[in-house]
View 1: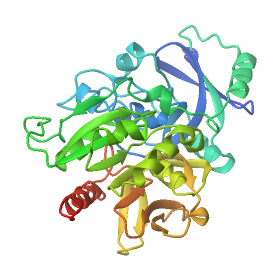
View 2: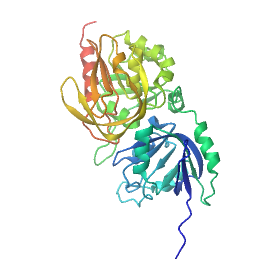
View 3: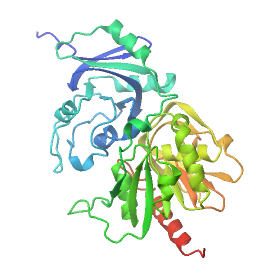
View 4: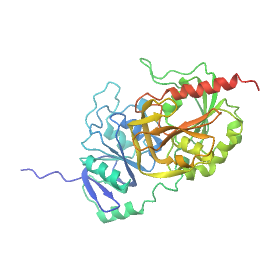
Length: 386
């Protein structure tokens, strides 16, 4: 009888728990916070979502690799998540859009994967104990210094107090006119925009920018550190605050003053994810770290204004404290999983934001109407007499 294959990857939690498996992708080791994602599709979009900076993702859906990868599905130039944990070895791609297998794609981009893990057990641990700090190592020879890996996991600084938006934002401003993918030609260009939008890049996904362009926007993207002077100099019809990673309170040190000054000009403002948290902080609310966060494409959210329930895509480890919302700012959406805040709006002003990702990459398209709502707010403002 052949001897069992020697493990070539090792996942070590800060409490000393060790998971052995089969490595794929890049070799070496990395440390990060561990989270889990329940989406059944979109692993490439998840790995390239800048909101996952500083995190390793456990995929609860076992079929990873089955659609391969394609440059069209990158949400940013390279994977941002530090690594991935899966139940089974990545399967061979079976999709007409695939241009490459997952494993070499990860290897070329320096991201480690580990397969053969009991992801149900790992997910239960995360849910019960909170998102742990971990070390992930891949060595084809199977040589691991577990004590050193435990020490590395314990030495990870964590995400609280960290401004990661500066690490994933664009280096300089740029224009965006690419619209959402459409059969059979791919991504068309916006040639007749109606609204001038400044998008602040805290870690923006490409498909979010495409949704803005598809809603009729001429989009100029500015870095996370842009000042109100930078924004207003472009004379926008509206300002968009993007998704992003890290502790919103840390990013807010420079983002909040900018947003507060922009709000004084009574123009439409729309935020999502970290942008939602930035807006809430600018309005006087507070944010808190969640135990294990929300990561997946099946999160039910209730619109308190209409009573409707939307199935949404989420990726966040911090949340707005609804009890801290000031007078004149109302809670518009709540999570039906745990009651946490998922949306706010300013009474009497075209200023609103949501915690989830309405661009549906990956995920359901229940919430794409929010981009049209933003466009309608800019249209209404343009028709208001000065």
